[in-house]
Length: 432
Image (cartoon, rainbow, N blue to C red; front, side):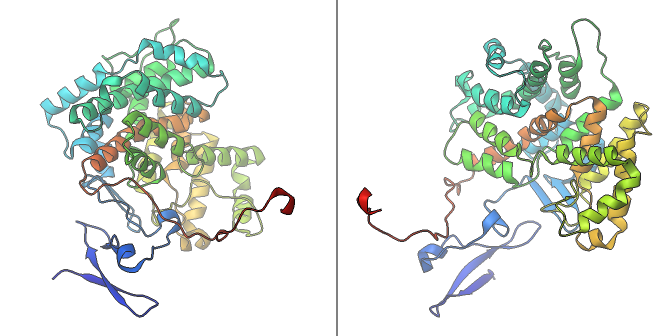
């Protein structure tokens, strides 16, 4: 028997709405007919209780600390797969077999170079421009260079655009870095892995050989896996909303990058590292207790960055994996006595044992450790969100493609609760 939910209106009428169930997760009340039946809308700032779409890509159980890509636990994917395996999974719904993987990797690597004129596009930015500002402009400009993949109604155009974005994003990010530090651009090397190629474009110089460190390569690859998708977050919702108008995929991904740039979203790992650096300057581990007291003081403006999450009310599963990766990287580089990592461990211990944080479910999230790992890899703070954009691109594309193929999708048009002036007449200027 189909489930129904009943809504009692102020005028005494009872309206029934279907209750829809997913494969896992909470049921939802289908209120699409609400306005037609009642003349009323729902009010839900921040979409705290609203499902904007149905999806088969990513599932999060925040209370249990579960993250699944196409049903696979993130812990298993991070251990047994590399980033391009995860890209294939998010785009196609299943992990690739050997022939499928070889074909997919080959196609991606054939698209790693960017149009030569795009190199000159960077010259229009100031050298001290934030790399994310450069990213928004350059990715948006791809639609001016690749006219043969802009028809969103053509499956082949969508496929080619997807490969181009996944393949060219490491090149674009590395070029943004090289431009800001005044070093020459490094061309892709397709004999390297996806992540190894990115590291080579970031860190190699014409004057000396650069060898990719396997431990560091795997660490960065894991960062990409952990950030590849995260359900209907702000930037993903931005990509879907942009795409609902029929905008081309390059424009949609540029919109996602712009949203991700916000400090409450992709900039969180930068903020977490900044917090640790400030405490270190103030006295390090000895000052953790004093800092925690300030965090608890409601009259203080001090905030604890890298703890808690909009969705997770348990230990973020990505944070556990990033913590392990952090140990591996610091040990490989001989930085096991790194003061920031020691400081992070001290803060984590207090937060996991102090009732103030436990009762509020303020557990460490992935941003708490990823900034330390990237810093150890030699990635500057200004590039952290660019790395996030690189990782999340495949998730944005998968979500965009799913929306385009959804027969129920419509142009996004949220409603509002209007509280402005009622209708009034314009007075002559002398009477105002």
